Image 1 (cartoon, rainbow, N blue to C red):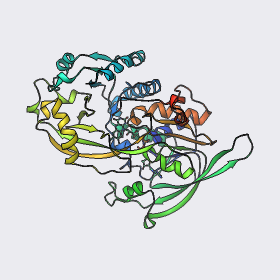
Image 2 (image 1 turned 120 degrees about the horizontal axis):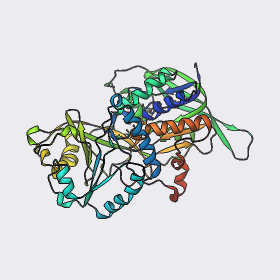
Image 3 (image 1 turned 180 degrees about the vertical axis):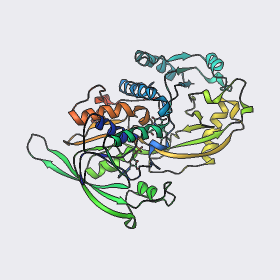
Image 4 (image 1 turned 45 degrees about the vertical axis):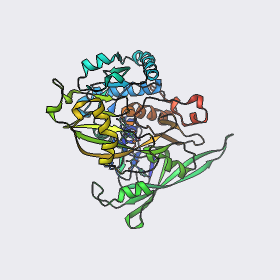
Length: 427
Ligand SMILES: Cc1cc2nc3c(=O)[nH]c(=O)nc-3n(C[C@H](O)[C@H](O)[C@H](O)COP(=O)(O)OP(=O)(O)OC[C@H]3O[C@@H](n4cnc5c(N)ncnc54)[C@H](O)[C@@H]3O)c2cc1C
């Protein structure tokens, strides 16, 4: 495509790659994806927990995740999808009552969510053998499960490339040119071109810290620049995940989201410490009433916890033993004696881009004729990716949503709290 693109997708994470594939599948040509680091060393798509559930509290999230899970199930082997369910424990009676009420919406969508008593939990999940008297009830959603997020992103990208999409690696979007659209009643702008800096190739794990430095400080050091170009475009889609607000600022659009660090630990449990009959590998996602979640991850257990007072910022530091010992281990051991003597293996940190209502943003950006966004899916980007990709491809190609209607996720909902798509049950 030389230095022009029909559709320029900024960001090649699971959302940008999925959108590129969906556009190409519709027959849209001239799709170019630019990303600083397609390996995704700091991309949320590579650093997440691999949970996949459709059991949300808002119809648009239920439907888009349900469709994405169907897609995962259809390609279960390639995408590492295991339909093992989500068990969600409640210690708060009001929250549990609301969860039971939301089963109506979820089960109307065919999700088959069960309500469990604490005795049911004890009988069906013998790993949870501590302090169950605190639990007022639980839900179990058998159609939810676990997926390999890296495989999902790779699937979208491989198919997009096979259909002619160009992915430009080590390309950092540093600037945006816009122009006023002449004519019409309202003042509209359009994106004319992106200014892109080509960055020197580096080691695949970014041991030099070049990519991490750029993604934390938002500028490319002069010595790392190997080329500069201007890509003219007919349409631009912001798929920058946690970096979306940086792009919004470049284009003069007020943003309402912020990047927030989320940490994950890998833990080892001795087989001899497991209660009789427990096969860890067969478990799905367990979300404890304390907010801690865990599931089997290869030979380990993956456990995550979102610190409520975590300040916003581009922070990728994993707090190591301090995080594990303060936040993870006490919660695991409080609910399951198997974790009394567990071993902290390692961990990592990635970013959520958090919206005020904890739902993602998708649609055309108000005030622009050719600027779209699909971003800020907080902790839901992988499990929503297929439906978002399909819906956004339809919007970009035809000007309207088709089979999946993402209208509720338009960013201008934040102007009116009555239109917020609030999700209270997030991890
Ligand atoms: C710890 C953690 C656990 C999570 N758990 C789950 C889960 O269980 N299930 C789930 O569905 N979701 C989960 N999520 C959320 C999910 O990972 C994200 O919603 C999703 O990956 C977002 O994908 P994305 O493509 O929008 O962004 P990303 O994957 O972050 O991609 C953005 C890309 O933009 C690139 N970039 C940034 N700035 C520029 C620039 N100026 N120029 C060019 N390129 C640039 C980056 O290199 C990156 O590749 C979790 C997230 C975290 C951090």
